[in-house]
Length: 198
Picture 1 (cartoon, rainbow, N blue to C red):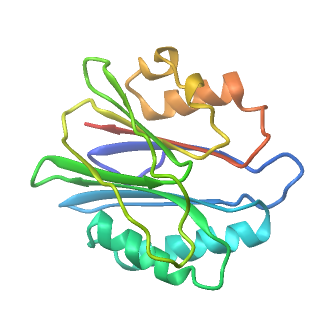
Picture 2 (picture 1 turned 90 degrees about the vertical axis):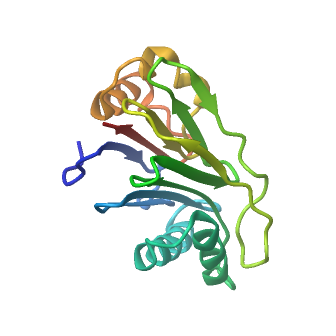
């Protein structure tokens, strides 16, 4: 389990594509008294150039964590002029408003699991960020204690994130279960971020 988070327990499983030293996926998260922010970017292609684009996007998010999801996506898009594009997912939880918002562009998946076990699968916006203006869709909802958020790159087959994995309410256990069941199948860079709001 990643340390330092108080209200959101977070765990990450990440592996590079078979045969690659560099993973093209980059992620960032931060928790403050008021909010929690998590982002995952996958650079197009794989290897070092893909990593360079996904890292550039994470640096923007790290430098501007207080911006809204919409404003963050816009800033990330600007930094990609002249670079390989990325697909991107951003989740923000506002503790004061007891709400969450997220957006995903391209094949970054987001699944939410309510405390009663009801699952909601986000349909990402098609395409990718590449420096050109892009329309955006942001999903909003009310946060509940015990809620699970899963964010993942295309190396994760979302059908494998079945109730067998999401019935547990522990972030580390979710990523461990996934790793043990499917961690060896690596046709692409793989990142799974499990977050549980307490």
